[in-house]
Length: 69
Image (cartoon, rainbow, N blue to C red; front, side):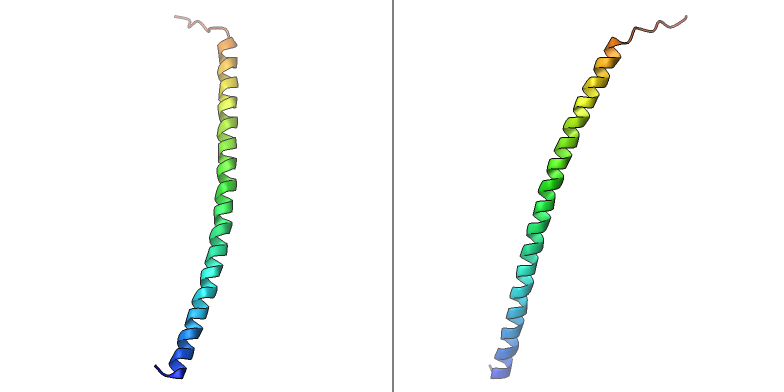
């Protein structure tokens, strides 16, 4: 392998390492966003369940409507 080929190979390896580091940072940011969105989703699901329970409790308090038959 010639010196020029070795230099080209070294440059390619260096570019690959830089790209790999960029991808690692991007992946870490995306993982952080997934964690935030997962927490937000769980919070919204909890709020929805509480709201449904309140609506169900209010419906139970309503007087029974007799159908005019």
